[in-house]
Length: 377
Image (cartoon, rainbow, N blue to C red; front, side, top):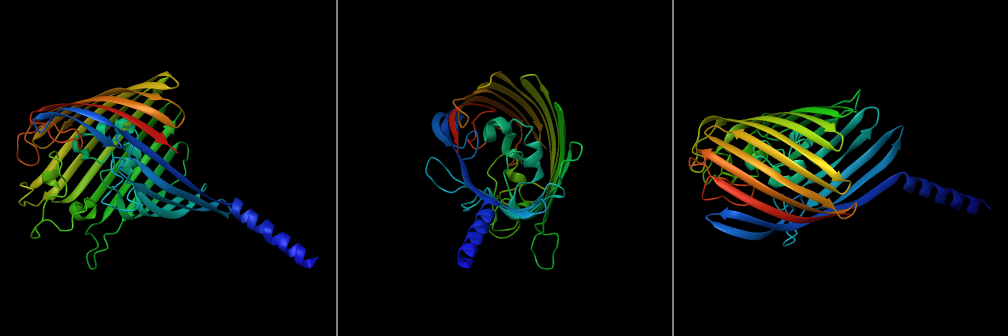
């Protein structure tokens, strides 16, 4: 009898523990075709991966520790659907990798590789939220589409109080004897009440070439080359500091919504090198308005316009297209992108259009049309 009672108690305890813990396998597969009217002087039709959302596979888990406290973790991999290769610098969990504690009363504290507040807060208002990298500002100089994630990050997100929520992130550089080298901090506020929402965010990144752009060499070292290939800011990547401020407003109107986004980006103390022929400070000011309207529950159409004034160049970009949901998990996205450039780019050459990672045009104007299929699981 005692053995039976003990076995039953252990079985109930194991069942209760299992019920208090959960691990979820999730993912997204996104692939499509894109037509570019001018890619190094020639039209091109090519397959693309993650054109609307980066393809990923992840594990997300939580364990109830009692008293409203939970242990949480996320491990998320990014991959290329066209060839199966890892993305994000060939990392196994390049998109996210963190563990932490979460409390409804006190907020959430996490440690690991994570997003900064520009991506988390301001990016949610921008055109990138509809079209990922095809909707990002030229070169993604303001990180609204997560050009980088932050390694070794300690991140805190407060509970929402009267619609207001605070986020703070800090990543020590890890350089012995030099607390400032490779150091990153990021702060953000978000407010939401009824149809109105707003956000503010700020990033301060020391030594961006090595801290977030994955260069093995610091600017000035023999053999250094800019780790960024984008002509919009690649010539400024040797800066000692990369600082970004963003502000956004959003309002829902019936079946539609409209958003306004402003970012100010500064590359400070640029070191002249063979691949970065600049010095001093380069400032980008970007202004965006975008909106979307749901024609039916399954079909919406989106439009965005972005104007960017760089140090010696100007860029304009328009994105427009529909998104149709075949089911709750599967949708089709079509978008056309027009970009125009003028002035001199960060490499010291006449500015040409260069839509995201599609390659440079041979002229100031470039047009792309993308059709993609996305499935979530």
